[in-house]
Image 1 (tube, rainbow, N blue to C red):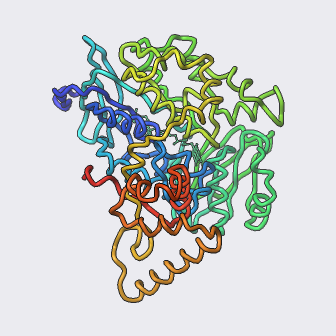
Image 2 (tube, rainbow, N blue to C red):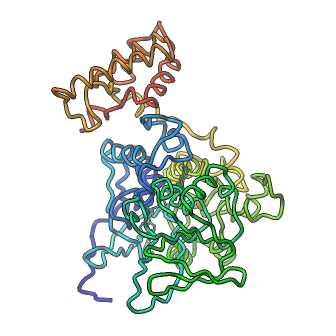
Length: 487
Ligand SMILES: Cc1cc2nc3c(=O)[nH]c(=O)nc-3n(C[C@H](O)[C@H](O)[C@H](O)COP(=O)(O)OP(=O)(O)OC[C@H]3O[C@@H](n4cnc5c(N)ncnc54)[C@H](O)[C@@H]3O)c2cc1C
């Protein structure tokens, strides 16, 4: 290691959060509420790096409210089907609105704990840098599994595990390796863009490959699945896949590899060094499968596997979650069995609880074992709104302005008026609701939600008002601005 290149900050943060996904940002948000001197380090080029990597326009399987922090509304075109872009936009606004501090392109590579201070080594563009803190909260767990290939000299096959837009593959012959949801999303997206793809699976088809629409797409684009692939070799302008003793030589310009995720060996090594987790837990985590995989591969039942059965196969990190040993805290996907359908919501919840335990605001005794089952069964009950923050937001009618708040002129103004009329018609047609009309009228960007509640008191209950506000936030009628005093 080049010592001259290491920069050490003398400042000692109270808390450093590792990973700026929804879980890390939730933790940072909660820490900011308590006035804690906290910062987050993120290895990607921006916060939400893992979501930036989803295919553009991807419709998430979770509704908008699963991605919300402490009830702050994720306003979008349709709350049932938020997109990658809606989520990225929302978190940008959260970071701005609550002045959250995030250092991107800072990858944690090592931690030393000396005299109650953590010295965190981060790999940055300018070499190694050391940050110091009293509390360290891990929210970064999963990384993509890699396949090692030997690539012959002069091979024209490009191999990648990153894919976000069909244009990357346009005009190319594409082979996708992987049978999980990510690989299938990419395949579907490419087939919908008119591309023919070959998908290589290690196993038999999974349920999503049997979806009739997926099969129609496969047929319509002359795409195909090759099952039980055991070996893949890269050739000059093609690949050779061996399945069930049969060899397939497939022309290939672009090989996209999406074979699932694994728990980061680097993070496990760091927790081992800090003696937070023992050998048994580390082994369980290293071999951890996702809840979806446990369900898929389980011999317990092919059709339905209960939460309890999955929880039994999941490592219980109760101790590490509640004890704060050496002032190390953990939150996120490693703690629970939320599948992709509710995963992020439970992960966000664990971040909020973890910070509350750290700040002595919640007694660890309130949390029961086994932790994965406790979280799975109680997350709805535990999820609380941050009344103060939600009340402070200033709702704004999305009518004559664009999302980027550029005033519309000329032709666009005409469009703006038309769309405002359409919006009003939509409200009248779908819910002839005087409350909605009141809220739209008062959503000028200067009243706060709390002020609107006060103004309409007597006519409607505050619960009615808040519920109606959320309906409008989830139908592209209202957006919100942060509290005036935060800017
Ligand atoms: C295509 C796709 C669709 C999905 N859809 C849904 C959905 O609809 N609903 C749902 O609940 N879940 C969904 N998921 C799962 C989803 O990724 C998680 O729910 C969500 O991102 C979890 O947030 P997180 O903050 O816990 O983890 P992440 O978003 O993975 O954040 C962890 C962060 O830590 C960073 N990091 C890792 N190692 C280090 C290090 N050493 N130093 C610094 N930073 C580090 C990573 O770059 C990352 O930004 C989907 C996943 C995929 C791939």
